[in-house]
Amino acid sequence: MTGRRRIRSTFRSTFLHRHHRPVRATALAAGALVACAALTAGCGVVPGTTAGSGGGPIKVMTWAPSDTEATNKPGMPAFARAYARWINSKGGINGRRLTVLTCNEHNDAVSAATCARRAVKENVVAVVGSYSQYGNSFFPPLEGAGIPYIGGYGVTNDEFTSPLSYPVNGGQPTLLAGLGKELAAACGNVTLVRPDTIAGDELPILLDSGLTTGGHRVASDVRAADDATEYSAQSTKALDSAAVDDPARGAKQGCVVPALGDRTSTFMDSFRRAREEYPAVRTAMAMGSVDQTVIDASGGASGPYEGSYITGWYPVESDARWDAMKKVISAEAFGDNRIDSADAGVQTTWIAYTVFEKAVESLGGGEVSADSVRGALNDGLKISTGGLTPTLRWPTRDTWSSTDDLASVGFPRLVNAHVTLQVVRQGQLVSAREGFTDVTRTLRNADVD
Image (cartoon, rainbow, N blue to C red; front, top):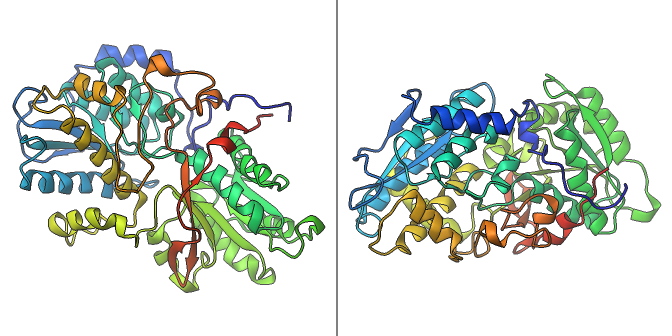
């Protein structure tokens, strides 16, 4: 280590390790040239007119990948449509109906740009509660048209740097830093298993920032191919490393942290077989690599995740603070198996639409447009999410400072650095510690080689 430096802008998240980033300047120019192109592809709409301002319906868009061989988040646009039905049944927002356009992002850069250009063509006032790994493809069209991106899933670095982004969680950076901070007190040796890629190179930095903040030594680093079909060798190596006695940690169990994104489940299949000789070693991971649906599909209490520590952005699904969201699902999407209240994507979409609703309400009877929504959020509007996050408030470009919050490590739009610690007990994610942990200081102390 050579001292604290800015986390490189190449950091995205473990979800992104397969992909290369296009040149942003080129994408900006291309986005400006094709912003008005005719568009098609995988999109739906809650019925309504096309007006985005004035006295007509308020139009927004939600996108996410569906029916792909990689990450799929169909619950996010499905919930957005359910939310529109629910809010319209109550008279809309400030008496105006909400129209939700949806788009299948297909988990590729071309489709992400297509969805964004359609949002521009349709004159939406915001993109709300969406998932895409391709910030360099979808942000240029949005930025060219001044359309805010509210409550993305947090899987791209761009979501924490673009002045038009209003993230509601801290993405992968907070999850890994928070996980390291918690494991410092709970674990003996810690071993990280991560992709052998440039993006994967950033993951030890974040985990180690939490470990060292808690007085723990850095994690052992096991690299793995990002497209493997099994991980027997990596599982054995990780277990050997985690099981080594560490006199400084006393008799505490070692911990293995798989951070392989979509391949985490594949790793855990191999790990389940290899760990029979290491019963004392525990696992820990970040939300996004695993959630309740994955735990259920892998066998619940008898599966490989039992006893695992997991850091999340929000309270556990059984928390009463989710009751309002569950009522929307029950009223407008009962029986829609795409929508799971335990899905972090659905939860993020609920919070994103909560932010959007309150931003529009703050405008009173005034014009609702991309400019006015963005202006409301930039004017210091404080938004409560009912305790699901801390009170949210975003800075304007004029208030950015290299000494403010997380701007100094490359995340000027990151306003929620709180995480929760959960554990899998009897096949269910439950709170391991009450309340949130703020990892702002931990991230600011992150070191870069």
